[in-house]
Length: 168
Ligand SMILES: Cc1cc2nc3c(=O)[nH]c(=O)nc-3n(C[C@H](O)[C@H](O)[C@H](O)COP(=O)(O)O)c2cc1C
Image 1 (cartoon, helix red, strand yellow):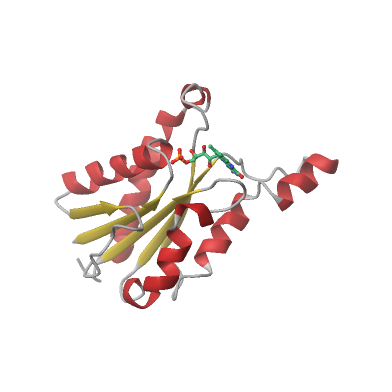
Image 2: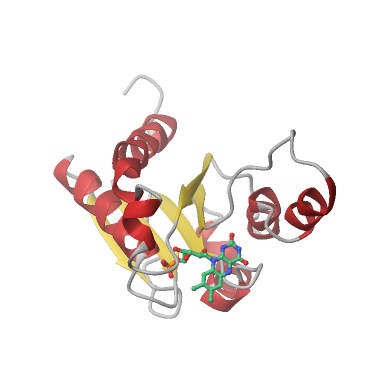
């Protein structure tokens, strides 16, 4: 398959690393993988589009992925899409109380980040995922960033399974 990975990030850090894992894995399975930032992506003949974005200052807007989807939704909507978010926020914790809980719901809410991008897609993505990023290089080890690699490749496998024609 031809797989386009369009990834929004303003740094050479977590999102770029995750995309490199994806590309290496999908390439090793014999797929043609094109990885580009939103401003550079121009291959609209893919069998699957994996769209990913980092989050900065409570929003994915600054990476250019939302603008890319708005501009090209007609073309990427022709194929299946999948969406991943790279951020620092943890899942909301039902046990958390008070102001911390309110602040997290309003601002550090990764489901909201996901919804704000997913709603721009012309059809529902075949898969979504959250991956943990790191703010400073020192944080990479603290959040055990590398341990996500299997989850990243397993997510890619699930997308391939969902994209494969029936009986394949
Ligand atoms: C300037 C800045 C602002 C950030 N703001 C948020 C935020 O509002 N919410 C969040 O969950 N993570 C936030 N983060 C964490 C990033 O999502 C995380 O560092 C991620 O790895 C960024 O992607 P990148 O490594 O590809 O740049 C922020 C990070 C930076 C550097």
